Image (cartoon, rainbow, N blue to C red; front, top):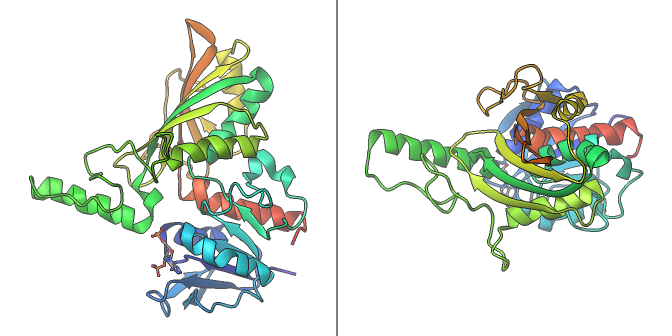
Length: 340
Ligand code: A2P
């Protein structure tokens, strides 16, 4: 029978995208319940043509819920996801809380749907980091055809990765720069002011000098691709873009790479658009990429001095591809395979 669904964090940036996608993708369900903090309890939100009332997560009963999407932050997942799973819900968690837990599969359906064979031991399926997802969607085919020695990535991450408050702080800062030059800019969400700036620091600092965001991209890529020694090294940067992350990716393969074949293989991947297929050097940007449910690739170039190495540029909607869409595609896979 159709599953009962709950969305935890339904009022947030990812939660609202989940609400939209559940309607537009026609995810089968027998009802959708919405949860958020006490601040939002009682708010009314339309889901799939019906108005639903947001409930307080505190005291929320998951016993009638088959699939619970969690996107209310890591600390909320740490506190509430295991109890929800214990009440019988299959949790699809968008946060960092369980991604490296050995009992929790970390899934990008286009890459490793095969790890979904039944209900996971933890009752939780983790959704990877928003920058990891589009990257691994491209790396699998490269690894299989040419082998990978090393991947070097710089990310250009949008404000929406910090949720509605992140978007609001970018807008507020931009207003101030334009209309009150010299005013002190807000810097609560990104550590430094983001408007008309770039900030090479996301999440917290680790003892290695890398940030947690940078470490996530390494560890998660290894787990999803099943390559425990894969060498991925990253600098994660926040840029004053409202939505959609970009990444400049250098791959050093083990074998020499033919550009035309690389472009053809990337273009064959599901839900990937390669912009320089016909026009050398063409490229997507966050504002112009087009189809929001595709990973967009451009600037594919093999280095003349090192034919094993190539660069590409990618753009992917972090709220959709990097979060809500991947989560819904996990749910679709679970339902298609009768794994509930
Ligand atoms: P609320 O709107 O009631 O604060 P975003 O990432 O856009 O900031 O959204 C975060 C989401 O997580 C929102 O839906 C927010 O609800 C929810 N949330 C934050 N803290 C809690 C909490 N302690 N309990 C339940 N939901 C929470």
